Each structure stands twice: as C-alpha cells, then as structure tokens.
Image (cartoon, rainbow, N blue to C red; front, side):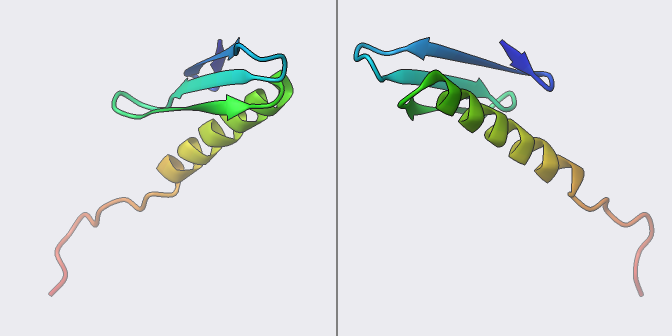
Length: 68
C-alpha cells in the first residue's frame, strides 16, 4: 500500500489480535512493528510517515554566502 508516496505493508500475524506493519521511510530507513488491530497498525504507519515528511520539510537550507 502507499501513503503520501511511501510504501508500507500491514499483514495479520499468527494470533487473532496480532498485526505486523512495515514502512519504508526512505532508501535506508525501514521501520516495522506489531499492533493489536489493523486500524492501530495503520495509525502507527500514517503517524511515522507524517513525522518523517515533516522532519524533511523543516530542515533549514544552508546559507548561500559566508559570514564574516
């Protein structure tokens, strides 16, 4: 599945209240975990993606000139 350009998967685990999620935040960063429901897993994935994208937007640009 995809959210805001980031790929993620949510699959049911072995137990009845077991869901596993994996999200690819960038080329090097993959996060994964477990949740007790599919909705909880999706909420975690959406939160992680939003957090990662917000962090990219707030990085300051390097200065164009030198400071004396």
